[in-house]
Image (cartoon, rainbow, N blue to C red; front, side, top):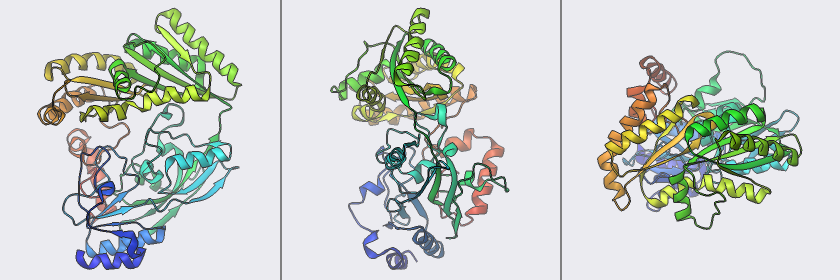
Amino acid sequence: MSDALVPILQTIVGAEQVLQGDGLDSYEVDWRKRYRGRALAVVRPGQADEVAAVVRACAAAGVPIVPQGGNTGLVGGGVPDDSGRQVLMSLTRLNGIRQIDADNLTMTVEAGCVLQAVQQEADAHDLLFPLSLAAEGSCTIGGNLASNAGGTQVLRYGNARELCLGLEVVTPQGELWSALSGLRKNNTGYDLRDLFIGSEGTLGIITAATLKLFPRPASTVTALAACESVEAAVRLLGLARRRLGADLTGFELMQRFALSLVAQHFPQLPQPLPTAPWTVLIETGGTAAESEERERMSAVLESAMEEGDVSDAVVASSLAQSQGLWHLRESIPLAQSQEGLNIKHDISLPVSDIAGFVERMAATLAQAAPGSRIVCFGHLGDGNLHYNLQAPAGAAAADFLARHESRINQLVYDEVQRLGGSFSAEHGIGALKRDELARRGSAVGVRMMRAIKDALDPTGIMNPGRVV
């Protein structure tokens, strides 16, 4: 049946939009170069009814479908396996902006819209779409919603789930369900929207979404602060919350070694503070004049310095300086990639437990994997750490992962679980963490997830081998 499927797909979307053969690495290899597959075909529909028709054809042929947006995921959820029997559906041609309703503060966009394009369109209407990720120039709204992306402004605006009011989805049977509502209140039965957000393409394919917009802040102020410990950074967070309130939009934590990798691999990026054990990036967005916001930020930092929680600080005085500070933070994953393969952990913990976790885990890993280099950074404001390990300097990274990854994952996730945290904060489950979910998830919860999967996708054609 799979051989007969390709001509049908060509009829639906056009022969030039069905790709086969070699040279498909941009679709078949994941962002981290960890997963490499081989698709029966890459299909690039251009509108929602084409997506539905492709799904119906694949369902009739019994051929699995792997939906893909910008292919920027970090858990192997958006590339095919190596069987050569799966159809990879790229949504990047569904990139239209259907409507902006400024009075209702909503924007309806198609799933293939690049996040940065959505941000820019909102800005052109003097509005804000606050989802912000390092990959925002490549990732797409459909993928952001399918993985319930987080990013740097969750502290104030929430994850992707909180930024979506309605969806258009193609079901595993090839039906088009449209609920592109801009309503804030709609209490009519089960919230089907939330089933698909975060489902990583295992329950259906998101083709469009109605997103929340916000008034653009009158002023934005960014600062860096040097701290001697994570405890000091947590106290600074508490002070910033009390003094800045809802204007606090970002609070990022960066360990010294993480910034040293940035300095090594991107020496052109200025680092305005002397090296310190920990550096915090703080951002506010408020309605007051920029000079007033800068005074408020400076007052917070001065108080923290008087208390001994901050040893040095700098407040950006221009948009260019603010962007430069954010480039430091956003360049850490790229610097890690330049340094070599690494073991990644995307964990969340109660903020009150983060300092103890960091201290205990450093001691544990020094014994379990001597010489390994911890790269710790992330969104302290919402309790999400990217707690990663590089191989010892000069060691072969692939050998290090083969020897230590399983044990290190167990040690990190055991401690996270003991503290009531999550082993997947914002990256999702995909293929990488599917077995961890089976082992560590609530047995009742996992059974309910499997029941939902079986009910909506009884033949299992939607992104098989992911999540559950």
